[in-house]
Image 1 (tube, helix red, strand yellow):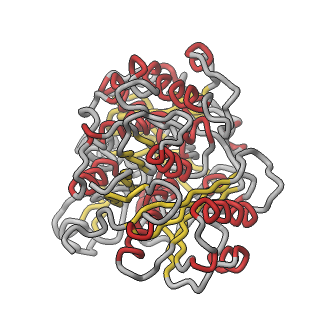
Image 2 (image 1 turned 30 degrees about the vertical axis):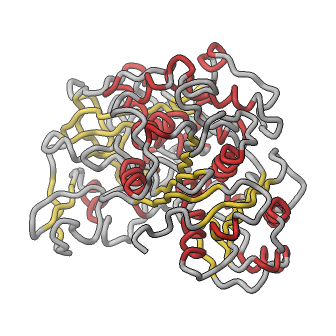
Amino acid sequence: MTDGIKDRTAIVGIGQTAFGKGLPQSELGLACEAISSALDDCGIAASEVDGMVSYTLETNSEVDVARSVGLGDIRYFSQVGYGGGAGCGTILHAAMAVATGQADVVVAWRSRKRAAATSRPWAQVEARIDGPGQFTRTFGLLRPVDEIAMLTRRYMHEYGATRDHLANVAIAARKHANRNPNATMYQRTLSREEYMNGRWISEPLCLFDNCLETDGALAAIIVSAERAKDLPHTPAYIHSAAQSIPQEHQTMTNFYTADPLRGPAWECANALWAKSDVKPSDVKVAQLYDAFSPLIILSLEGYGFCARGEGGPFTDNGNIELGGQLPVNTSGAGMSEAYVHGFNLITEGVRQMRGTSTSQVEDADSCLVTSGEGVPTSAILLTNAVQ
Amino acid sequence: METGFLLPVLDDPDTLPFWEGAARHELLVQHCASCGIARVPPRPMCPHCRSMDVAWEPVSGRGTVWSYVVPHPPLLPAYSEFAPYNVIVVALEENPGLRIVGNLVESADADLNSIDPHSIVIGEPVRVVFHQIDDVTFPRWVRASG
């Protein structure tokens, strides 16, 4: 099979919990709720699930989830690493498992309670720092936002990007969230003035350049394209999928390569588009991982929507808002819907293929979904019909 | 009192020579003893020739600011006390492709926030100084003109 996994599998069920802070359910309870709702969405029995994929960040074990939800005999299970870089990788692993016959029905999920200490690895103070962090964290470069701010400052210096470009990203996400009743920021607008007055977190990044802090869980069910045709919703076919750790890459603090502003998105994009009949110019909607606003600008470049250095101006004139050339993050995503390490970008991609997004792009027949830029990453290209 | 700062392990054979050099007020960069190519941060094998033979060689300690950030709270308490402070990435004079993270300060033992962070300019020249916290000596950076 020279075409690998192309079009051979689809996401047929999606589910999620409420999003919020301090939700009463346990992290395990949230996972069970999201998976259960994804199964109901596609009408597949829990006992049919024989594959499970999540993030290495996930603290709920497969066995706890499986025996709570009543899943079947599990024949395939894996976890994908690198925080927010993992999301689309879970779908890729699920698709490979189904396409190769290692499993028939795979659930991918992410559940998170922000209050859990394990949810904030950067805030855990070890007695001593080891690994590459001993050359960064010890100088007060403590948080992910500090690490991305360092690359952002250099990016602004090299290409002339401005805070107005970053504001474009935050405002687009907020406008989309204002149309999505499930979004944390559904009822809270964001003006450019509010953005500019936002308190600093790590200059040049302010509060509104950061994603939300959210409790919540999401899940997706992956089966073969053949089976998908018999299920209730329009399948979101997994047309292409890729993961990437570029040569010499260092996670988050990628200051040491010849070209630090060319992150993993570029090689991930090369692998993704090489196996895709859909090209960037065909894509009418995208869900781009947004732990921080500059990651959108870098991803627009990395995935081929514009040239190096043009990601900032690409966001001008409402170009990434509904009605623009490429609406991005149509649910509000991590910055304004919920931050669950990007899994809500995947479910929103599925809704765009079904035609059920609250910011539906009318003629969208494909949707790019990406995971964290700046870390070993992954991406998927969903379509609503076999190409 | 400088307490509560994050300190490196001092028992990792791949990185210990860097900290031992700093304790002698030498800024050392790991080089491959076989093919000679420098690598930052340190690692056990040369990605170019797969040699595990290592040479730690001193560099001039001069460079330029490649980028910088100004962290604000919420931060770990020890750092929060000095916020807003700066963290810089220095491109070394010998090879601007070699970059090192540090702090720009007024003088070797000055506070973390001793420089107005908004006075920092990308490209400005800096030179290394050394400052001890507990059993660790850190390289820090001062303006080359200062």
